[in-house]
Length: 200
Ligand code: FE2
Image 1 (cartoon, rainbow, N blue to C red):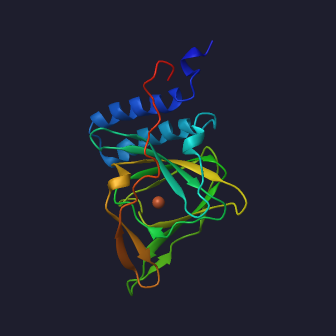
Image 2 (image 1 turned 60 degrees about the horizontal axis):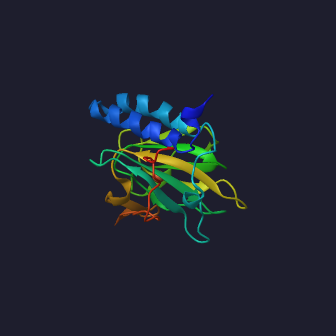
């Protein structure tokens, strides 16, 4: 019997619980990420739990649905839903982030400052497959452009960030000039999934 995992949201609830305990320890970023990355890898091991309402693409814009926000703003978890062919601008996060691929695939291209202050691609574009995770942070490299690997289907990654990412003040960049423009991403949903019902 696997009754403990019978409800699809139990998987997410357990990550929230483990991450809350972990955040309480006040670890340095590297130590925290070393513990948090396997939690996120576990979360995308199976694509059987994300509620349909939080997996919906938009015809024009990629979507970010809040799945859980720590009450003290120490971390948040979102589903990032790509419509076919969609991509982000070059952007930063200003907090650490763990990107875990759930469905489809995505490409991430890191950017770095050049001598004249522009932003240029740094290293090869990296393809993330289901079950894989990658990390960003001001320490590890925080500026990238990401795109759906597919022109004809939806891709979804689950992200965890070291803050309430929907209200973090961060930046998009004009790569040619390196000029930064402030932005706050917000969230696409007004309701979060109920992790606290008797069956979750
Ligand atoms: Fe990003």
